Length: 268
Ligand SMILES: [Zn+2]
Ligand SMILES: [Zn+2]
Image (cartoon, rainbow, N blue to C red; front, side, top):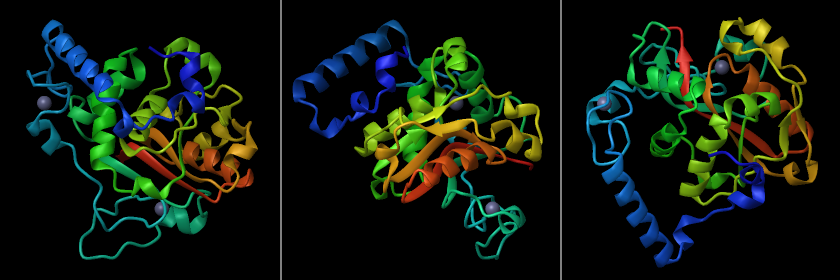
């Protein structure tokens, strides 16, 4: 369950490899007890599994973005035999982040029950925090970036009004899972969403840019200055949110801001 304490970066500087054996043992016992009470299943198709994750068949259906792709925003070109280069959008306006990469890709044309598309819908629009673990695992397993290159992981923040309504920040849970696995600190406190924004889903690119303009603010610049930041979000669609967050972080003195999303939505 989300708690205000978990928002603070100090509370999530976790390094699992340094866990005492006794704590790990208790965790395994607890996981075992939970699996007896609540048998695990594939979060994509529901078939029984040893632990909550995606089954092999669903994993095969979840595609990874392939080259050739845009060197900056990571948009796959859908062609073969070409080298990575800048896409038209990044040629027209260079993003404020260094590069954006996704762990998986789905198309608008994919069927509604496509494993990743369906799970992300559930994760984003229902209070189902149990999905954070398998999705965090997928994020860590398929991450195309070297996490050790970053000094801090930051989730895209939610406005406090949406946080109250939803009960948790879906990007923060993903960022926390990645931070724990990689042993890199997470800071979910220094970047803040200072005004509520409309859901981006029904907006085009220009409207999305206007919607998020000046929606974020760095409230602890000293924690951002000279940092190599990996910004984490659940889905990258047009990149307007990632671009706006990165602009604020770079203006506050960050050395690098790269973006990692669990999924990238593409036209086809
Ligand atoms: Zn499955
Ligand atoms: Zn691009």
